[in-house]
Amino acid sequence: MNRVTPKTPRDEIVALIRRDGYVLMEDALTSSQVATLSIAYDAQLARTPLAPGATRVETPRILERDPAFETLMDLPTTFPIARAVIGADIELASGGELDHKLPRTPAYISWHNDFQWMTDIPYPRQNFWLRCTYFLSDVREDTGPFTLLPGTHRNDRACPPEMNEANGQPKFIPGQIGVTGPAGSCLINNTEIWHTNSPLTGDLPRRLIMILYKHAWMKQWEQGYEITPEFADRQTDPVRRQLTGGVAWHQDRSHFPAAEI
Image (cartoon, rainbow, N blue to C red; front, side, top):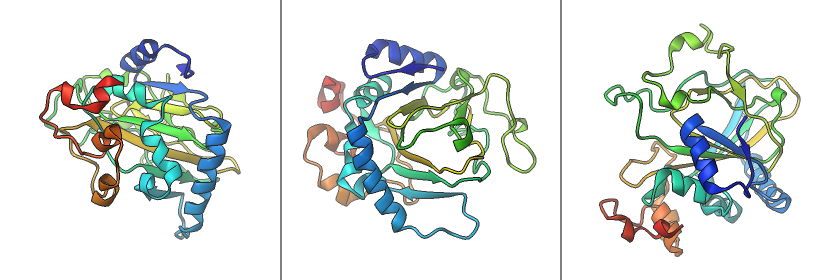
């Protein structure tokens, strides 16, 4: 597994993401940050009653629901990596997402690459989103780790449906990696990598926060996941204004505050 830390040289991390499609950065969050985020996370869970038969709790637009979450959009340990991979025109692709997988539940999504529905865009894909997934609890083999096939973001075809069972559960694929790590870690991955959720077989939930980045000229994830105008309007920091859509996409890189990061 590609394990790195905030002390790993940026160029080395970027090279791993370009080659294999992912890294796991341990210690992306300090223990104090994990504690602060966990309080805000639990407050959100308390506001969300479980639906009958639910396998997870999903809360979109998490960045604007508590100032603690807002810090994740440009976290000093991970944002420079996202900026280096995407480029100077980096923006948020959504308002972020709380993802809470419940104990003893099956996978809620099977093998796929995120943009495989874009049938008119040829492979290998040059365009993608980058996801930063923060672990607020230890992720172990029995807590439904995010599972991926390294290097498949460079494939010349979409993730094949034969990788999934008839009941929608993912098959075991030789070479797959279940990304495990301690609380405070961050999985940084190209969203075109072939990946899947996995069953949570243990008694503890999986506690994640996901932040997505894209090029400025790409559309956001819509249908209730996009950044609200109110959240964008209250940003005063130049980089955060860029991340929330405050810089015209058709500019050269000198117009993007994030170009200096």
